[in-house]
Image (cartoon, rainbow, N blue to C red; front, side):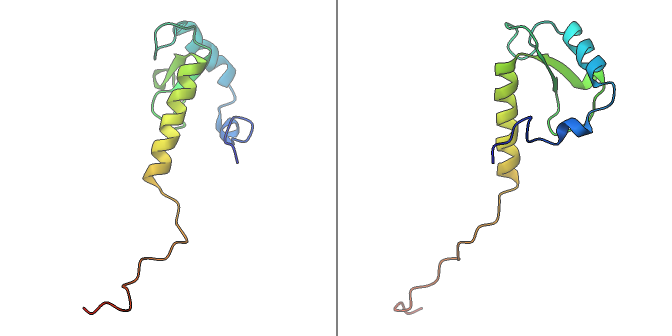
Length: 98
């Protein structure tokens, strides 16, 4: 299943005043704080996987930078918590003498 904003439960964890907070972040950071080139359109959490919605914990980001940053963070999260496998451990060959 693809993970994106439409399938995420993250929106339910946003504070009631998220629109105001987002507007303040984008007004403070009109240019992407990651690349420094494109206009900010996303209020990005600087520390990934947190619900800290204070202005100091957020930065303005353009869509391409935010997408790349989120992909890197998600890959690191998946690598840190690998899914269990159904593969059996290797067995010693029955013809070998120990």
